[in-house]
Amino acid sequence: MPPGIMTLAADEATLSPANTGFMLICTALVMLMTPALAFFYGGMVRVKSVLNMLMMSFISLGIVTVLWVLYGFGIAFGQDSGGFLGRPGDFAGLSGIGLTELWGTTSIPVYVFAAFQLMFAVITPALISGALADRVKFTAWALFIALWATVVYFPVAHWVWAEGGWLFDLGVIDFAGGTAVHINAGAAALGVIFVVGRRIGFKKDPMRPHNLPLVMLGAGLLWFGWFGFNAGSWLNNDDGVGAVAFVNTQVATAAAMLGWLGYEKIRHGSFTTLGAASGAVAGLVAITPACGAVSPLGAIGVGVIAGVLCAMAVGLKYRFGYDDSLDVVGVHLVGGIAGSLLVGLFATGGVQSDAKGLFYGGGLDQLGKQAVGVVSVLLYSLVISFLLAKIIDVLMGFRVSEDEEVAGVDQAAHAETAYDFGGTGGGVVARAGAGAGAGAASASGPALGGGPSPSRGKGQGKGQGEAHGKARGASRATGRGTDTGDRANRAEEAQATDKEQGAGEGKGQGPAPASGSEKRVDA
Amino acid sequence: MKLITAVIKPYRLDEVKEALQSFGVHGLTVTEASGYGRQRGHTEVYRGAEYTVDLVPKVRIEVLVDDADADELIDIVVKAARTGKIGDGKVWSLPVEEAVRVRTGERGPDAL
Image (tube, rainbow over all chains, first blue to last red; front, top):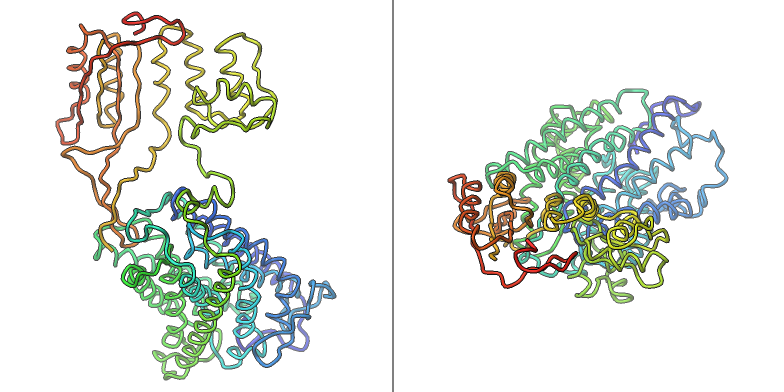
């Protein structure tokens, strides 16, 4: 990925244990970003589809990893043919690679490079999922990931980062993935939205985030993982460029968070947590292509511009009526474009390469190259993603049915519910014949609000005889009677008489159910 | 018998509970509720999209009492729940035809 120069003397590169260790850590950091993204997105959707949101990211870890081993690494980084593709057969199965065989002119083994690049390939399709919250078939999404990675991500990664890739040869600066990752995913999101359409009730029903602490957690972990994403992209530690990338990552992210919060305070009156999280991510996106080209002061510029720009851009979906549910376009496409173009303004010429931006006396040359990178990746991804989604939609339908969407994709796709807050556990009863405990459980468990009673044979308590003994046995059989239920049971047993109503006092914990009555007022 | 229902600010629950206990009320039922009166709701903003949240979180307390105690208990609840600020809630009572203790089958005031 470092364009142009691989610092170590090309001829006699030797394996560097330090660089290898550093890169393995960076690889693990980037891996963490996909679960982090899952939480970031998961907190923003409604309760009924949070699991689906998490799974849309996690499944990418599964599918793309396998494809990468089979042919993905070959397409992205195999022997170049014509600047657009690597040879899929190269590295097939990641076999035939020597343990200490070095990647290109670097000082790290091929295996390390392949693993590091894999994590980028995993998170990029996952980024798209935010635009499709609450409404797509899981199988359709899985198929889309497989196709999209194959036809869009692997080739584009080749264009941008592989020796011989046409954007690489052109001199486009993309340190860690402004074009290949963020513009690529953002444009794909836009393409797929055109096929999939809006959520039922878009602009009408309340769709506020169900768990902002989860969003903050995800944003924090993304920020952390991003150090591996950016600093690791230099592939070595020998010349300090990675350190600059590391510092710039922190600086731009901080500045973008402030930029978003400031815009929001002026425009809407409050500093919101969602704004802080979104601003940080916008900054991370924008500094991704630029972190090896700009100075820390330049990083502040990149961050503030990206933060404000993205904060403005997330409102566009209401104006134009496309349902980019979690603002993949507003944050990743806009942030990616901003960062990639700002390289053409802020590049100092003193870090990763000697290409100077407009503000440092380099004229418009680099800006022009950056624009070519932006436009080509954007258009390719937009068009191909639209076509892929269209094909899937015709073949199997991309969306879940209306009923399933209203009830929530979690139940339709995963047969699960994320949270069990209600004292009655939603009236869950074990299915008949599911286990020996079922009889006891349905006899008394649900009546006492004992939560879900899955099949577990233990059931019958300690033969304490009648009513109370059984109640206890049942709720133990479930292995996880809800708090309320358990406490009520215990309370009841302790009191043993007279104060039936008092059992209700054990209550009072557990979040209030989401009140269904907010109205969106303003777009 | 009467059913006294009070919808109050959640953080006044403990006060009300204690006041009722010291009066000698044996049991009560509490539900988390939401609603609005003159207080109305508030506005929330998520990435620039504004939502008015009409319904404010409240706690609903229900107590079954003897006819004779009803008025005094209402006063006790009102006093304990009052902050003097808008949104303090409401208390009302209804006549109750029958009450049965499930465990023993006792009926009427004996079941209280």
